[in-house]
Length: 245
Image (cartoon, rainbow, N blue to C red; front, side, top):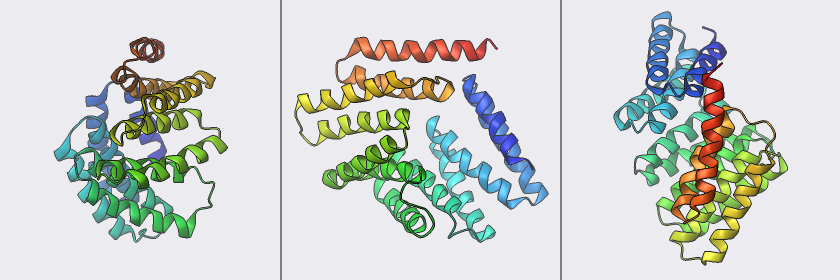
């Protein structure tokens, strides 16, 4: 199975915001891979399903995909490869989203062990680990550790010129600042930095639209209704252009 083509076609569904159709496409692709005995392709699709179900608040589907992904990692004997680390991050993020941060941290620890043995310090994949582990630590009430992870993520994303991901990190830091009792001024500093970073992005495709739509509610949460609406507007214009093609 051409897994790159499968993921590309799923991304097209997402870009058009046809989320239900994209989920069904992934399930059919996973079943086809299973029937063909193509374990590596099924693993990649199952991993993608974890994220799909998380983003669409499908707890049961997410946990089913997690279970199958763990089984497939064992079947492919890929447990010490970077791809397994990435899958463990995805699993941990799913558990965090559905209120299981302590369980999530177990998988982030697995990912960190694999990454420390297989990746360089400037590899972009560390950013996902830092950010998502920080969210789990925050949900578990471990604020100091969460802050350290967020700062590691921001530093790496800045070095790699990944402005969208760095912006998300600063939005996350604003929420951490709120729950940990930091000042309103510090929260504003984080949000200002996130907004500035989003303004610096020149290539504004579907991922940029997704990030803007993801960050916008946080600006609204902190009372910055104007910038929340502006970011939503950016996302809507991009999605409309994509849908019209």
